Image (cartoon, rainbow, N blue to C red; front, side):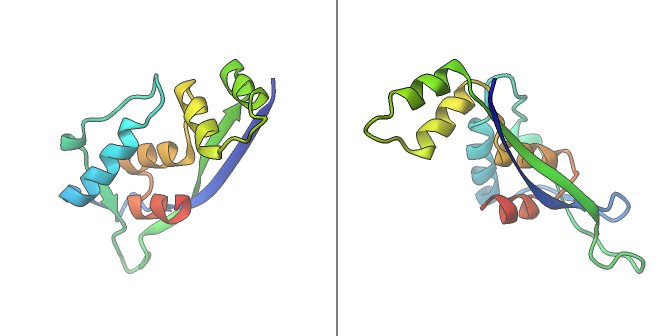
Length: 132
C-alpha cells in the first residue's frame, strides 16, 4: 500500500483563556460547505448548535495560544484512486483525485482542521490561514 501524507501546523488555543462564540451566518455557510464535504464515516456536527473558540488574553498569555498542533491528511492509494490515475492518459486534475480519495474516506487538512476548531483545540481563523 502506498501513502502520501501532508501536514501543517496551527497554533493551539490556550484552554485557560479561549472564548466560545457562535459563528455568524457567513461563517456558518463556509463551515457548512466544509462539513458537507466530510468523508463517509466522519461525524458531521449540527451547524446550528456548534460553538467555535477564539483566542483570549491574560497577563501571562497576551496572544491566547499555547503550543502547536498538526492538521493532517493522508492519501492512500485505494483501488479507486489507482484506477483514476491509470486512466489519466489525457491528464487529470488534483481536484478529481481529491474528490475520489474523499469519497473513499480520506480526511483532508481542512476537514481535520474544522473538526479540531469545533472541538476547541484551535481557532477557525488558524485553520483557514494554513489551509488557504
